[in-house]
Length: 454
Ligand code: F0G
Image 1: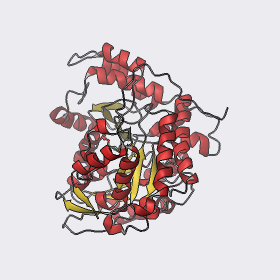
Image 2 (image 1 turned 135 degrees about the horizontal axis):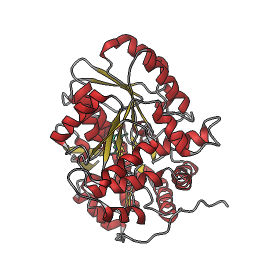
Image 3 (image 1 turned 120 degrees about the vertical axis):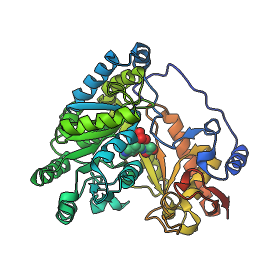
């Protein structure tokens, strides 16, 4: 059949409050044209993030009731630990309240002044945790990963040549090599198993540990199964196990590919590092068997991990993201190609050539999408990255708008509606105006900056 159906039925619903275009024009103005300032009840389709926005299953909600909240010795921890080890056979599994807490613990131990940490592309919180320890975070993705039009099947790959040169330059000051699957900051692009093996071999030669930022590991495994030669007949679970067998540790945000609204973990094999990590954990998160979580959260993660590796789910997930992306390509909307796993990234600078980069075409597009259709996306461009630490302004490499798709939340008719909104947007794109910043904080301005239409 041509149609890939959502492999679930809906048991609980959350109403969407309908709004008109003129209401939305007023609401976004009241929010100073910053989409983070909108009340979520005033959004029809919320594509701000795929993080913590998943719909949990009936089984997960049942697990929530089963959660054992004992301070120590809880069976919920044991179920969580077993579910993680079933896919990711690390010796030590340390729960945290979300991904960045795992990053904070790891880099407070291995980072520090003079250290250099490579990745395909560091996610913002990973970079920030490395930099706040005094270390340097460096991105070494393959060149194709920086070209929005390249159709390379694994644009998230870490460049082996760049990594060799990096290790040669920084030698003893590289505490570990990191690789992010899928590469969120590079468009949700996957990393191949062959690349992971090559990076492992380089790490072995230089005796360096390899850590995986694994937020979207199941989506990455599905891309390996469908795009990498020789992998097509293998099960997702086998591919996932192969991926993690290559690593010495991982950080995880369970808010993505564990289908929960809050949670994360740090996993590793090194006994001494694990002991030190648990000591920091006790100071900042909680006792080692719950970290920053409740027993019920650990249950929901354990069940989510079982559900996320199911092929019917992943087929629906990747097909439905591609369905949106390919429909936008048909309409002539420039997007980052090929379509990633969790999101579609629109090239706003290309879509709105009449708006100069200094007038934030990404923000202008995000505002227009909200006014036209009540859709909330996220600018990833000069608003997010343009302000330099010394207060000066530098144009970002690209002005993108990310439409991140929550897991198991929207149906095909929601997506068809979004496509229709883009059709309308294409008709009126010449009348879309740029914006200026009227107020901004000294750092992380995209969350709270105020804008005015030009
Ligand atoms: N690593 C990657 C690749 C991520 O995408 C995120 C979060 C994190 C680490 C941090 O995890 O939020 O649980 O602390 N990404 C979200 C997003 C926020 O919208 O892409 P966290």
